[in-house]
Image (cartoon, rainbow, N blue to C red; front, top):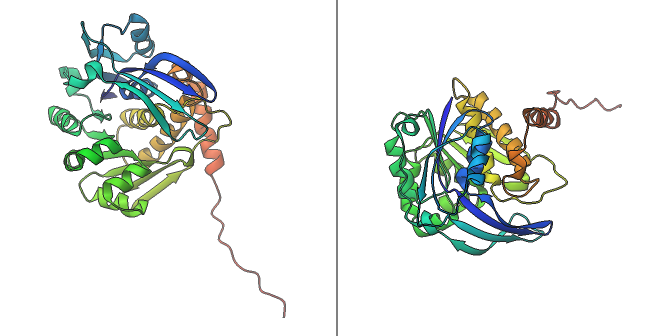
Length: 312
């Protein structure tokens, strides 16, 4: 039961039709680690500046996330992103990005982080992802995320990193862009041909799909009436997915399918409030109830249909 995540720890400023926050805890590694912490022990690897206070560290500590590998730069500032969402919450409008200490981030992994059973490479420079993967030869299952910026600017490097991981977790637009295939099934098949065993394609409010060699599994998104902030939902999904897998003795078809559900469950909570607010206050009772809800609204009986003979 051990998992390492390498990625951004950040501050966000957000505005949606339902509210506004001027400065809240964010970052891919943050959302991932809090989500995964409900299932397993998590080591987070990142970098912050001197503006990152004990109040932010307390969020990690409340969930027993190991922060020993978060580097503090005494004379630096933490990565900052400001964004706005209109009523189409699938589209984030970036208003400001300050990379700050994250611009020169070189992950420094302790022996404990290097030796963890599972590894997640959050959305960072693909060459750094590949370097981290090579530092963790004992990892049994390695997953990565990427984004359109890296696919546009250094696609070959993204593909080289994909070749050394077990799982790719990306959204549908990125999968099409990466594979140069408009059909999502063909895109997944092409990405699988590069080496990974598993592709998870996130589809936002339409759910997610799991592709392996010869297997396909798809789930809807959890039906929500109130969505306040989708920032970090994909990383929260990945945290639930990888966290659940880290808690299992073996990773197989059944555990992957359950991990998809837990990923979607965790993402559904993330969007109900701003930043980490909802996941920070989450209980196991709520998680298990929503998991049961998924089973209820996706279950059906296998009853073959036979057309009745018409009367002469």
